[in-house]
Length: 300
Length: 229
Image 1 (cartoon, rainbow over the protein chains, first blue to last red):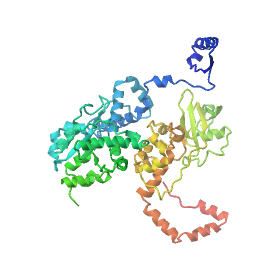
Image 2 (tube, rainbow over the protein chains, first blue to last red):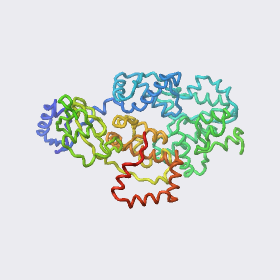
Image 3 (cartoon, rainbow over the protein chains, first blue to last red):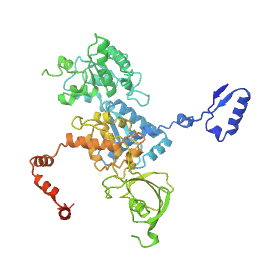
Image 4 (spheres, one colour):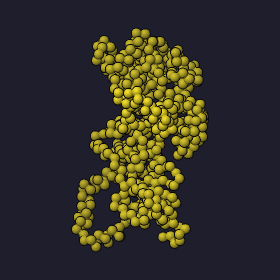
């Protein structure tokens, strides 16, 4: 019986006795072990190590820039505010790693040798929703010029804003931060089953139909629950939920375009800002007909 | 030229030990040691980027980059000349492309692989923040990408070191082209000079230069107006 045999590097160096006895006894047992002509390290060092230092260089470099801003007095606090769910997750995750793994700190710093200063781990990563929450919902409520009365808004959290635990901006199972924001703006938050489900993320590049399917489920659930619009804090969620509607409409003639916007656009609307501060023209699904119907925007 | 032995350093040119005067640049030291540059040498003034060099100091694992015509030799330098950086030349029609992030991704999709490791910046002999301009291009900040990459000579050292196989200098060049065409726009001076050329303002002068003999040309060249910096 001729079988391919992968010895591995240890059997060729410090465990030669293992290699030779294997080959010889196998031969006697009628098993002919044949070593490949070309082979390389089985990959154990890389596969088993938790070395993800390279992944964290980019975020830590950004956090270092924030620390420098604090040092030079450009900002008062060693804190960074971000709105994109993915940036938030990445920056916060790297910061957590940096502050909890001293081995990695050393390695990360070694890889950033040409920076003029070393990151101290002082930066606090915060999502704008948290910042507004810390200001107090009443503060937001008091600044509202156009209360979004009778507007039924479904908050779509997606995954990266809430998970993993310890990283998310709210309770991963029962989030309420976007609901509180919606209420402060005078609108009605709509709870729906798919608000924490994944939108399909980057599969949108190669598996359009699959993501269209996921998007349909999310949009349809929001619709069934009575929502008139979805707000999100993630550019990829916004992209998938709005751009994949093209495929949804192709497959389901009964589906009507459903508006999806960023939470900050909803805030801008309620604060009575100018239309060029809301930039609704950039959304694939135009929310303006709905807002005009509700009387929040003037008919032109 | 150095007068006594103390002013000499030992360098290794492609592995071969050489004693050369300590005040020479890498390029002159290599010539001193008997090498003749046929390729990999251009302006000798730090402007053309033809003489990219990699070197290592004895006892250090680090590979460093420099321009051979600019960097002075140091004791224990191990030098290799990189006369040419064989990267793909991407062609695009400047009149048909847009000044946005997607243009960079369309012609150079590999830039999305940038990990921000900063190896390119470390390799740059011009001290350009290479990673920063690649990142700026990635997010469509063409103005910043053009500004940060302005001093690029295209020597190619960044491209040779990038683990993501990005060719940063191509990115910088596209950024500067887009910036000058669509953002800064052609300047007034350029437009008015083009107009003058079209009107034939310089035709006579060019014709007389074309017909001048060598001696006249030498005379003209030596007495040309020089702008003081």
